[in-house]
Image 1 (cartoon, rainbow, N blue to C red):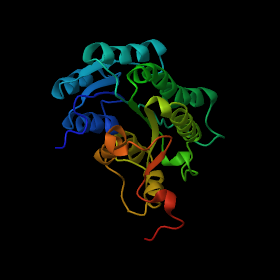
Image 2: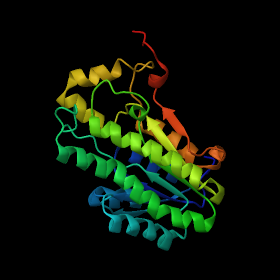
Image 3: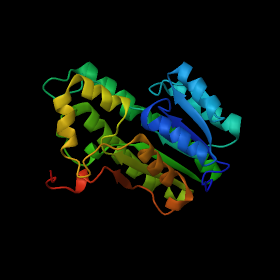
Image 4: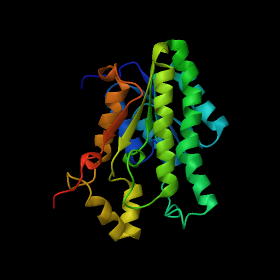
Amino acid sequence: MTRRLEGRVAVITGGCSGIGLATVERFAEEGARVVIGDLDDARGDEIAQRVDGLFVHCDVTSKGDVDALFAAAKNTFGSVDVAFNNAGISPPEDDSILDTDLDAWRRVQEVNLTSVYLCCKAALPYMIEQGKGSIINTASFVAVMGAATSQISYSASKGGVLSMSRELGVQFARQGVRVNALCPGPVNTPLLQELFAKDEEAARRRLVHIPMGRFAEPREMANAALFLACDESSFMTASTFLVDGGISGAYVTPV
């Protein structure tokens, strides 16, 4: 291993499953001290022990919880060098705009978009004081194109994450803080597996649009996050980092 994150402290939300868990493991392999923010206390403690990190119970829609998460990272390990703001949901109640009620809309916006605002707001003062830092916000390929299977609030929330990441990346570039949006294509995570279980046809419609002919694995997204976190991406900020198997570049997909 090259230990590309040696001596750095990384805060990862949604770190107990899917992309978040794969990134916790990958960052730890590269030498980072990892702080996990999640609601899953049992898994969080076990994962943190395994990677010699720290677990903090965190509701990412709560400003108090989010502020406490980043303060714990600073107070325990001495800095906040990387923030991977990754927590998100995609509930079945979020569907066509004609079928999605206001409560479902608001819940997705709170978890997927407001949480990223709160995490960036909490992380930035530490990074500005240090004069360096990398913020990575999980958006989606649906932030740059229409989704074949409608999830109106999810798509809108990820568009908001992308736009906010660009603005912050520009605003804080000369203070040494980089802010980029990671835009995954469909990933083989519990969220996608749940979709397969509930609606196989909807899942197949997603697969047919991917030129590579498969879903991504969580570790592939973790590797993309690692690139954005480390110095190899030192001239990247305010970027839309698409890791989507070719979806956004395809007009038609060969079968």
